[in-house]
Image 1 (cartoon, one colour):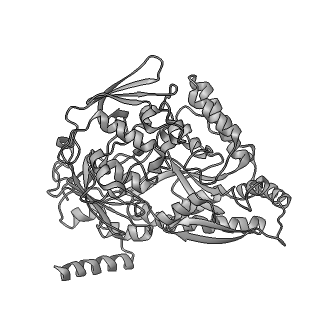
Image 2: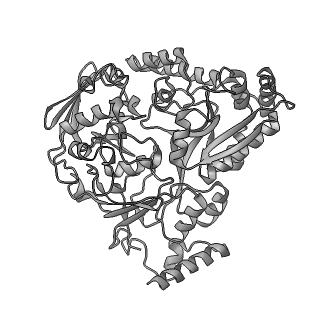
Image 3: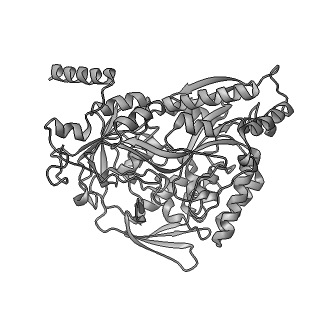
Length: 550
């Protein structure tokens, strides 16, 4: 068996080195292999196992202690919030089968599913959600994402340690009825409840194992899958949760997630049929992929922004807005998206992407030529005290990732050519990188991205609030905070959008972040992965997929 595997691997390697194209579905049929989906095109494979690339090793599986996209992909299979999300229907019932909202928009009453069960068979109750929400905002939990729950009555004071978690505006009326009271009407609140910070956790398990509860053999979850195995830096395996309320409509029995930080390696594994879906694709091989695997390439709109954060709590960016503006203007976003990323990313001249019911900020300099921007950047650079004879020396921090390095090299080159800046590139493994950013002690420039947790501009703006645990630039602008707080209480949607627009304009004037581009999702998906539907937030849940006969 080992020898067979070795020979197969050798054949795959030869295929890759020779530059031959993947046989794909057409090649399979020409070679006399099984037609995908059988004669009907809808026949299922006997083994329902999905293998997904997932970027980085997860920070944690505790939904109240993690913050990245790789973690969210895993938790979306393990847990389910009161609401769920459908790529075509939007917000749909999740662990709650229905809800009512009071006339003034501040009181939500949720009705739990009577057949909701945890992965150990315990019933999922309203008390579980009340416990989870209180735990998420409890300062003792050390969540960086608790700000997401700020719309709930008293959440801000609980997060600040001014009130106990029991003062949070949630209560279980009975086992199957949960009431949540808000500070003010919040149009996006149902979307918040589909976020990991609002997921329930199994109280007996958390209290028994403390900080080590989210591990194989211990983790109890209420989603479509339960944790089976976790081998660090290798894979995470989940199997169907037989107690999940919609298990009868779940097809895939087992899903394997692989933390592959190198996109070329991920592509090789996909071509060798060791993966059914990639997490990402290498910029430099998109041309080859378009030519050789056009039917398996999926590029779609993705509500997110790729940006560079500037640590404004330390020199050289502290109290030096001229320098921050100079670096912002010297980035040629057209060149980056047209010649480096090439998947259809949109140059970002403002910070918030095309969110629902929101007019994006477009600064005046967006209409300038790049030569005009560089000329202004040089003026600001000198005003900040730097020149080619006295150049800024700065580090760019990025997490280990082939594409992040490619972008960092390009931006370093732009800054060198336009201003003479000397850049050192520093890369760190995902979890270390997140911690380095958060401490704000050594970072200067760091790569970052933000993908919408819910389709609303507020989600992008709130991470730069001075009290946000995700405000890694350390920016503190009281006027900005006041605008966001007023927007959070505003009933009039047009007025609310205008307040957020003013807040975003402050971001672009103060430049704690340098927006680079607005994302698109780009991945390869095998033709036998059925029911794959792109989602604007890339919420791809394994329970919605199936493996066709092949």
